[in-house]
Structure formats: structure tokens, C-alpha cells
Image 1: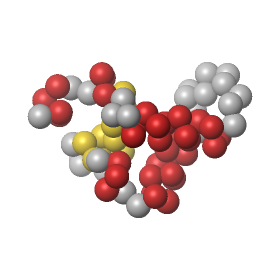
Image 2: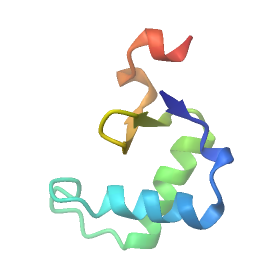
Image 3: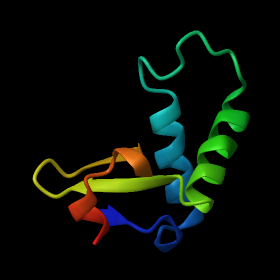
Length: 75
């Protein structure tokens, strides 16, 4: 299920993005400061290039590029 990012409180969205950009394997040697990485993700969400996917079974959220989302989720 997709969660519209604008439905989340600003603090919650920021923490979700920070969690995502600081996960092991997401930096790939990128030494860009955390606030810049957070802003990049926020911009991708605002532009509709990224989405928040929620898995009710695992109770986990993840950020995904819209192009990687199964088409049936977008209906």
C-alpha cells in the first residue's frame, strides 16, 4: 500500500527519510551531509519520483522510486 507523504506529520516524514538515507548500503561511499540527502529524498517525494510503501504484514515502510513500484499498487 502506498502512503501519500503529505499525510504524514513533518517530523514523522523527516525521521522516516533519515532512517532510509542512513541505512547500511544506502550511502555507497557518499559523504554528502545528512540534511542534503534528506532534502533530495523530500524533493523526489514532492516531484512524484519517489513514494512511501507500507507493508501491513511486516508493519514496515520503505521509500521506493515510483518506476520500481508494481503497477497494480498505483491504481
